[in-house]
Amino acid sequence: MSECTHDCGNCSANCGERQTPQSFLEAPHEGTTVHKVIGVVSGKGGVGKSMVTSLLAVLTNRAGYRTAVLDADITGPSIPTVFGLHDRAMGTEDGILPVVTPSGIKVMSLNLLIENETDPVVWRGPVIAGAVKQFWTDVLWGDVDYMFVDMPPGTGDVPLTVFQSLPLDGIVIVTSPQELVSMIVAKAVNMANMMDIPVLGIVENMAYFECPDCGKRHAIFGDSHVQAIAEQYGIPSIAQMPIDPKLAELADDGEIENVYGEWLDGLAEAIRG
Ligand code: ADP
Image (tube, rainbow, N blue to C red):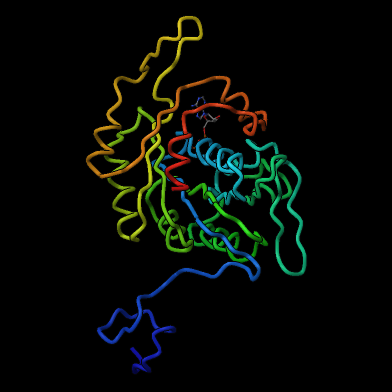
């Protein structure tokens, strides 16, 4: 090891001389001000993380706040699809311009940059994390009140690096009843605690099916334990969403901005609170 110059900015050693904690956080582009950054996480893919991220953005935008979505789920970028965005993002000499949805939400996703949106992304962890970092530093986001980040699924290396690269103000955990919910939540809570980021809420997606004929709710995957788990970890807000084929249809058709439901209203208000 070379002799200590007391310049902690260029040294990764965790010695007793360190004056300031090492920070991975990068500044956003000049001219960009993002007031609150909310990460949406899940234990695995396919539980509805992108659905919840986009619905929270839609509700926040409807409430009159300048809203953005950063799609950090690089290997499964479905945000452009649910908003019906198929044009590629444009750039200027200054940086990349986000694509704006019909209702005015700013979006950046890898699928808005690659030539063919069905091309697979076969990148290793550090490259994925680097791309997400660039979505934060090189995109001309402008003035944003709430940015929702569709995080990479899981609690491994890639989500951890993304956690460390973005100045998250809070996270929302999305689960589905098929998962080992208590373990998933414990891992997500631990990861958030490591980074001192509050867990604002938990969404149990596909919690029940409501019969279109009689309105009765059926817990297809058994009774929910999400309330008890939220209490155990002191998570202030919980929400449940039904399995709804209409919801899937609107999302797949790029019509997420035409979804009207009250499932996430309480959580969206809690985030703004
Ligand atoms: P993730 O981001 O966790 O990988 P998605 O949000 O992409 O998951 O959802 C996976 C699939 O499940 C999508 O086709 C989506 O439309 C569908 N889906 C998500 N939530 C629901 C729901 N509550 N009811 C019906 N379909 C849903």
